[in-house]
Amino acid sequence: MTLSFFRPDVLKDKRILVTGGGSGLGAEIARGLAAHGATIYICGRREEVLKETAAQISQETGGKVFAVACDIRDPQSIDKMLDLIWADGPLTGLVNNAAANFLSPTKSLSPRGYEAIRSTVMDGSFYVTLAIGKRWINEGIKGSVVSNLVTWVFTGSAFVTPSAMAKTAIHAMTMSLAVEWGPLGIRLNAVAPGPFPTEGAWEKLNPIPETSAGATDPSQIPMRRFGQMDELRSLIIFLMSDACNFLTGQTIAIDGGHHLAAPSTFAALSELTDEQWTAAREKIKAASERDKKARTVG
Image 1 (cartoon, rainbow, N blue to C red):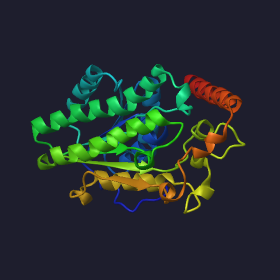
Image 2: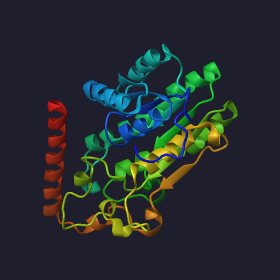
Image 3: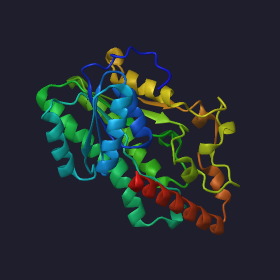
């Protein structure tokens, strides 16, 4: 981390779970929260990756970061995870970050492919939010939920239809539960990042160089650049802090004005031929295999 406007202890006494915290944006978010005094739990399905990430963040920030294996698509797995966490003390915050996505013409999408995205993004986020919310309500705890969404919740997005649908469902959950749980002191908000580069993600978002997917083209962003991780972390730190206890039910775009000015993120891919889509799928598959192999070797 290189930039922060907050005191190092602004999240002292906060205990926050970050789903999908073993890599990508989840790990970066966990790093920012830990660096500002929160005790962090990261969960996901790959226990070894989680342990490695937790150890690295703890060493870098001096914070307390713990790894807990959990399949958020399974309510029983969630309850088991929360029993382990609550044994050390209740959570005060949740970051719904776990996600699944891939580029595909919707006409080529299989029910299994749709299920893989919906079950993680929509079902998983709701299951975790509900399980933690029930505990907060029963124990009289005032908690905060921040869901990591996308600007597609405002605009939709071609070629990632299941993800756009599932993320929009969590956008609706955020508004609905903000009203229902507001009297209990439980806040729900969401962030909608634009392009924030993370290692390994760019190749999968724009697998064919001759196309210009909006997610990887800074010329389509009014501020003419990609987001910097410290900027996203600062927004989430603010939402998790006690500095904005009157803010709830909001999804805040942080994208340099991208969704206001540009066409749908992947609109340019409408020009691809079936042959180019086949080549794109092969490149995405190859990138995923390299990531998997790197994690195994590491």
